[in-house]
Image (cartoon, rainbow, N blue to C red):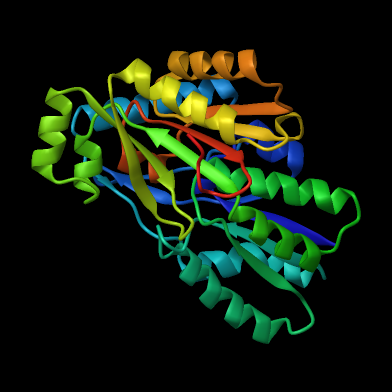
Length: 297
């Protein structure tokens, strides 16, 4: 038997975490000098949206946000009780190319492996963020319920990570400029001209801009079209939608996708505070499995 772990950047709603029995290790942000635990396990979807609105309103108002890694010690604290109970661990990490969190987990695993040499601890690098992590964790639980072993699941889902696409667009370019993905001047001009970049998780696990369009509605329609053209076996898939306080627009995205393809399930949730602080209010991201990450237009 093994237990499935993810960090709060996996963006799984509390009700989904309970449904699948996934363990979440939360990031902790600092908001105007006060700590904010990014995952709250008892919120309803409505409460999560309301808390998300408050968080992104604070960002709009100029709040100082600082993010930090999960420490090796906290990983050890989370994994150790499972290992002591004689069970194994599989952890789905925020991309190595986005965060140092993978390395922190790796160091914790090295220490724990010495302490528990007979137990297996597998880390799967999602090569992405948000629900790209979370959906892989869900698939791990489903495979476990079918009787598959931890190594088979970890190896298969590490391969699937290369096929799990993440597409997103933002409302205001200034938040991308703060993370160095755009210069301040490019963000200023882009906002003036209503330019909306389309971004994705690359095959190397980093976030890259790959297209520009003019206007919010066009950017949403473009990512809708890309999902519908590139998703594989949608009737078997979960599509993830993360929205940074733009819930009504996320419903529009869902509706338009459903008009074109039949999908097993949607998970539509407020963008997690850790990665959401880097894309800013108004960001919308879509996550789905394709044949690879080379998108056909």
